[in-house]
Amino acid sequence: MPAKLTYPFTRASIRRLKTGERVLLSGRIYTGRDRLHKFLAEGGCAPVSLKNGAIYHCGPVVIRAGGQWRVRAAGPTTSIREEPYMAAIVKQYGLTVIIGKGGMGAATLQACRRYGCIYLHAVGGAAQVLADTVKKVNGVYFHDTFGPTEALWELEVADFPCLVTMDAHGRSLHAAVARQAQARI
Amino acid sequence: MPSNWTQSLTELIRRTAADLPRDVAAALRKARRREKPQSAARWTLDTILDNIRLAQARGAPLCQDTGTLLFYCEVPLRCDTRALTAAIHASVRQATGRGNLRPNTIDTLTGCSCAHNRGDGMPVIHVEFAARRTAAIRLIMKGGGSENVSTQFSLPDTGLKAGRDLEGVRRCLLSAVVQAQGNGCAPGVLGVCIGGDRATGAEHAKRQLLRPLNDHAPEAYLAALERQALADAQKLGIGPMGFGGATTLLGVKIGALARLPACYFVSVAYMCWAFRRRGVVLDAAGRVVRHLYD
Image (cartoon, rainbow over all chains, first blue to last red; front, side, top):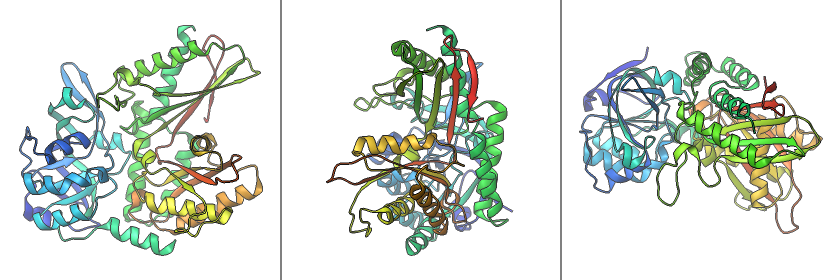
């Protein structure tokens, strides 16, 4: 059975999770991609509190219908592009959950261990399955400056399915699989 | 060109974004059966198959990254290509407005989102003339994650111990798969070109992705290399999304172009599992005569 994880994502609840474990995540998450990470890491002011929060590497398809935002597709984007910024954001903003795809590098893994944060991998391309878990769009920031894809969307999700691939204890499934593949080449 | 063209092409875009071709869906179902119950690989493929069903039923994009739009058009000799281009642009605009395409085109210099997914070089439109009465329009939507792990080698490559022969090409392909890990949304498909110059090689590699998964290269030695590279890639154990598992690739498609004596390029176009490829044959009025890849 997958573990349940609910916002706010406290350090104690994060540290219980281990690489390879499946998770159903519920509550508030924020989307963010390349422009947001660069902005935050370079000292920009976050419009929301990221403490005990989650950033989802995702540029959703969102449409405006009946005066409300509706998420039409919302799978993860490749996380490694945020590697230059992620550790600084984890440290500075008290972020405890990163959601994305493809995993991240040594600096992020070290930050996860030092500050208590995990990396949750969502299935890439599964934009409909994941959009179904979005129950509400609370709001959007940087819509006009970063554009709709790069904007920070505040979402409420229920039972968002993912897999722990980097935990708060220094373990990375990505590093293990890469080592094995390299040895077999 | 009559508005039927725009209408037919808008529907082609919607369907391509929402409905995976039959060969790709079948390959993913087969991959699922190869993975151990309770494994991360099995869970991943179950999620992927659920997603394919949901997207098809809703007619909604199966991946939020609706990708680079690659149009391959075979048209009659007298076709007005300016009108064809205008119809494609109009259909992209319509599909974007309806939420079938994400605003996915960025002005590289200003960083701003281009309106209606229209920018210099976007969408990509290839046109070939042929002695035919109808037009065959094929569309591939290729996501950014898979484009980022696509690559090109120049042989010989001493680091890879890859010489200018098919064994050298095989080593390049395995290296590309190891480098990609799960980042291209594995299990994917490799489109490969041996030879050409850097630009034509990359283009011809991408063009291999038009081939159905169950065909083989017409040249026996390339067909053998396709089989060998696929079998070797599965042994790497990278698996769906790079979580480890039995299926790392769904297929390998290799073509070749002539080259200069001094150059020997191996170009690799990695396509994600969300292999959105569709096509239609249209008559002069833009009405659908038949669907391709059904």
